[in-house]
Length: 87
Image 1 (cartoon, rainbow, N blue to C red):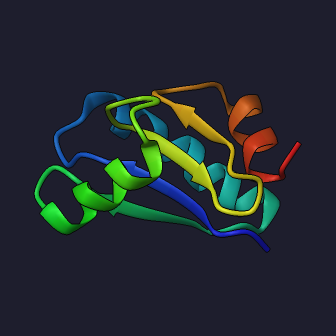
Image 2: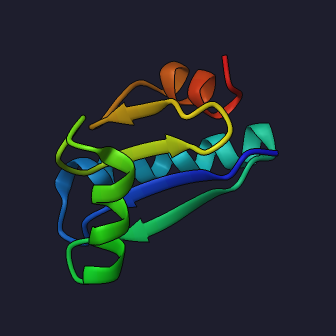
């Protein structure tokens, strides 16, 4: 199973909007999304910058390590599910 990463900011409104969808995805599809806080952790912010490579420049940022596909910003549950399942 691919590692699924969600970079977020503690006070990020759009990140908080995505949390229920991420939880639903984990429950329904049996996947695990690793949540990585970047606004208060410089090491995590550096990791985001390395993976993002200027594509999005913000959070939420989702990255699938297997497919190398990402999602910039808030999205629909269907797009999140396709991303997580590598479709």
